[in-house]
Length: 286
Image (spheres, rainbow, N blue to C red):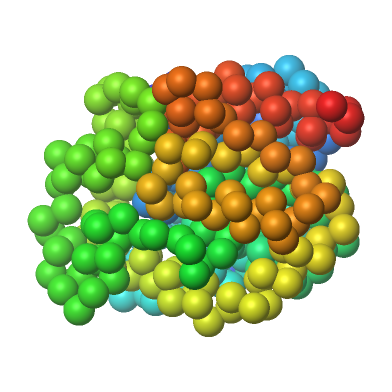
């Protein structure tokens, strides 16, 4: 599915003072599941596994966080993850969602940790794909470090589709076609999104500032928890050992069949992600 086709299946809703892209898939009486994407892409990342989760009986809600995809991309706004979590809550209020499972990736895992810290009772179960759950062992790629530096504001106009491809190839473990990366780029660059990357990467500071609170929210969450991890990931791969040590009751699926999966499991290896995620969201024990 192209990015434009994905957006055509949703709507833009005015929430918390911004226009936010929201999409729902699956039966209205299905198990509620909220999907939260990562940096620097969009909810379109989930399109690879949406049909399988719909077949599993899930009612799926996905959104583009502020500054991403088809949502507003304000140029002079200092994004932060607490605000992004409040945006997710506003989506739930708008759609009448009381409790929901969470499926999150990359930056989205921190949004999930904030939601757990606010009110874990609203989260029926939580699944995490490669993301910086433990900032001390997370390794942001070079392009993110540059955007996060004092030079970040100047680099926006130089952030090209070619540079995006190059950065992505460094974190992927399995082949992803140029056509697929192009659709990701469309979501990034729409409405001048390439020029605000220095503001979006401020989530790195949010993780450091909230490290103890968010780590505690993850480790004390009482609901069913699943980690689906691509080990060939130079950014978050090492976090897997911390998960094993500090979240001992969780289910862990490591996507290490050759070629091992990297930082984008749902894009690189959607069939394996779906095989682990669908029964978990359905409440089946494996």
